[in-house]
Picture 1 (cartoon, rainbow, N blue to C red):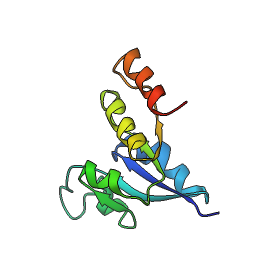
Picture 2 (tube, rainbow, N blue to C red):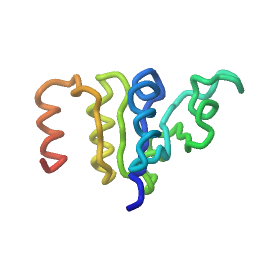
Picture 3 (tube, rainbow, N blue to C red):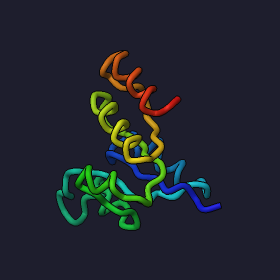
Length: 119
């Protein structure tokens, strides 16, 4: 079976420390892409995915990231207030999603997410 193609959103502490190492060590997963809107500050800026992980496709555009048909699973590693929007986009794009914590928009958005994910 081919590995699950993972796309990460954000490239901060959460993704770099908690999610990417697990994906890298597990042969059932492959880190395919990261959505990181800001460009690198320099050619040596290892806090940027394009420098730290040149083997991974880098997206600056949310639309292009979600249009990538290779991505099977999206890991949202951004501030909580962005979770609902990004997780909903992942589901609407036909991808599976993983949030590190629940969204910060209250019960109505979590209930809407439940309905949209066909749980």
